[in-house]
Length: 328
Ligand code: NAP
Ligand code: G4F
Image (cartoon, rainbow, N blue to C red; front, side, top):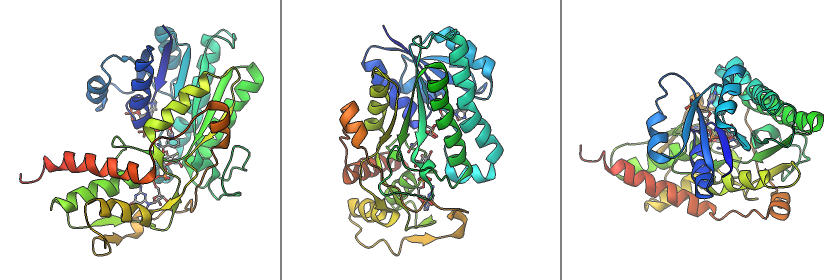
């Protein structure tokens, strides 16, 4: 039975990846942070077969201990401070977790493996946020990185450190440059979930309006359940490498609003949406659109859920969740 250790087990991707690996017969270990993590119950309810081990990406000795307990064939490093807006206000913490945390886990894997590069395969959750002020359209593996946030800069550090461990120690270390991926499990701080939750609440009469920042930014949005398959496929390849995972389509926040409101029968959302400078960023990533050709050709990866399907799935989920609040 193959064994995997996942950091970021309480997050959106950690849950989908756990389900995927358990369905493939893996023994799955999840790294859980803090002495009383509020998301512990969610993990226990959603993926009860995952074994939990405590640790923190900022604590190298805890990572070594987790590796000794899990004895994994594959390590998926999904843990990060992942909210871009938060990273300006918490730049040092973001650098420590999202950046230096990658070095800590790579080093822990190297020490645990006793410099035997065949012992553990490693996945790093890199991000399209690294492209920032994009230097090429669409963005591919070779596009120059120009990060625009402390989060993006930290991800660039982790990305190159992963490549460096592959080149220096022959480690099977792959980096997935994933474009935005969403789901009903997405945190409500991210724009897709903020929109779908608000649309459901407006439809149910629980909320009057929705306050957002920049409506013109464009993102290449896919479904998280599809993207974790690409992570797994990367670690099944004979050679480690870097891959862009994206849909190849881009949509603005306005398109997102069109689809989400139309799903509940509201064609003109202008009366419901307000803008507030509080939600504008010091530097914006205006346009992301990825070229997933390499992932298609080498991994045989294809996305299954398209943009209208994704928005519809999220709105339906929020209508179900929020209808419990209606009439209270
Ligand atoms: P998420 O839902 O925000 O989950 C982040 C996870 O990181 C949580 O489980 C969190 O655990 C954990 N974490 C935070 N600080 C930690 C620390 N010091 N030590 C160990 N774990 C820590 O993120 P996601 O959307 O699933 O994304 C997974 C990964 O992919 C992240 O690295 C993200 O940056 C990257 N990524 C995401 C996207 C996307 O569109 N979703 C795109 C590209 C890359 P707690 O519960 O303890 O806070
Ligand atoms: O949903 P977002 O917060 O996601 P963002 O910044 O693109 O980051 C996500 O995707 C990255 C991959 O490219 C990941 F690496 C990262 O961890 C995270 O998962 O914002 C998307 C866009 C931005 O342009 C933002 O300015 O939506 C715009 N936006 C407009 N109003 C808003 C809002 N974003 C948020 N969160 N909240 C708003 O009110």
